[in-house]
Length: 246
Ligand SMILES: [Fe+2]
Ligand SMILES: [Fe+2]
Image (cartoon, rainbow, N blue to C red; front, top):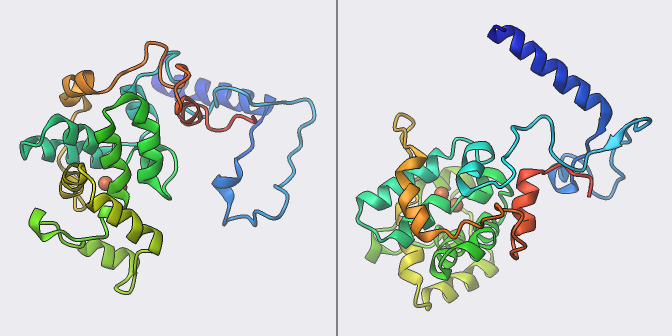
């Protein structure tokens, strides 16, 4: 079977699977594009079942997915996180900071952008040292506040992205104050120092460079992420199977 034939078969199988299924989007995927006060658009559901498992449009995850499976199949190219982790490694940071860099934007990459540091921290909290989760949580806010003693300036890209008049909301000021007075402030700050904003599109970093650091510092559950009944297992399941009806 040649590649074209194989691609046609896959297209055909996908079209057949889609014909048999009702696949709806969660309100959060469409809120803004659609008015969340209005009922969702009606689909013709006659003779079809509502999707309750794997979405046939997505690459299938293994039955016991690992962190790296999520990186490869759900977190996009993830180059930004890999380059940040490489930079932390080169800068001689300890493994907690390198791991925090590797994981810090996993929510923006594969789950939810808004409040991404908080979501990412919750996703990883059951599996990492709490100092790592703390750093990931507070990178959300520290990015907006300079600290010259670490050589960290307000990012110029934020002026481009959010305008010169953007001011963090009061809840961010409070989170910043809390972080600043915390014993793990330095860890969170080192994450922001190594959080690259102008990453190099020509530099490719292999995930496998971090196999050992992840092995030593991320408690991969034997059942697979999503199936170990941890406090964030449901979030990993949602990333794996994002369009289930319930
Ligand atoms: Fe981030
Ligand atoms: Fe980042």
